[in-house]
Length: 503
Image (cartoon, rainbow, N blue to C red; front, side, top):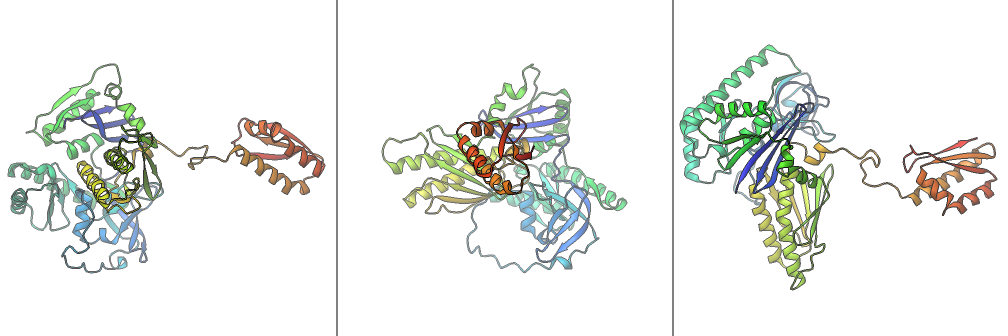
């Protein structure tokens, strides 16, 4: 698989696209006015403790208070590892042989209102929700993630070789500062002790500097800001299988060269400065693919299609045969469409960065073997996704429930806003419905309106209907209530808006 990083930088926005086999697979966007805060470390103040929710709200200096759950206060290592290294996993077995966890202590025993606490942002503010934070500070490096507040060693789940896991664990155990924790990242596979020691030395020094700042400052304030989007992508997803990096800014080019020389001196990458007059994303055909990623409907090669709808609580994906009629029988047609949809769904979830609860409505499959085949194909398609996923079996109704780790906003919510005309509903009342609402309102108001003439101000489209096909309704009201109705078209009105004015 050929991979490339294409970076477009302007004074107001930076976009980083990961291209796999000629198609955009992931897109990272950072705007100078809306820079992401995941990974930032704040000295916050507890403003409210909620025993009923086992959580607390913490003021970290943002518009909305951040949310801190009890498990993010105590040392629950599974939660910490999931936050730091989100490898793909699937449905948990009912009995994994592990002893039951002891109950979590009450949040009110751990935090009090007014208390200062050092926290790190785990999830961006999403929609109406504030940021999700944790008191388990973690500092990511190229090969290691440093956890100065816990005594633990973890290995990325994506490193599958058991001998390599043991080797890396032994190296970290021997060289780590006593009582501290490290997660060995996927990029550390095959690296030498020298590489790990250099990463560890840098991270330990960074933590000492942060601890010094924390002692000198008072809540609420920013203690440490994470890397910008370009450096973060280079640190987190740049691997040996990336063939080249193409960037259209000389300043960004120089920064990338310095970053790679500091953190990845042994790795050799082809770094190109794009100097053509044509915009770099146009030259690589990325603008068209990004535009497609904002649409509801995605066509499949066979003629079928999927519909993607995102709500506040979940995302729904609907699979349809569309124009595909098959060649043999209905069951084969359904299976082929579902299998083709699986690949596109995995691709779209990753590209659009859709997270949280996801419901996939496959076309109903009568055979259990077919449902198993589609489920296995979905698991396989999601293996290339770095975000942690959890997939349940497909039901007899063809529904697949899954979750995908959500850290930042999806592309749709980053690039779009609710339609100001329909107020985000996705629809407006029909013209006929609006006309009949006007009639009902006139009947309510006529008895209380003085005089014999009134002016009905409406949208031009509604005025046209009232003058034409619904003219009889206006005349009936005039005869019944003995009042004259003048209709005025107001181009600035919303389609559903109207006003009744006495003359």
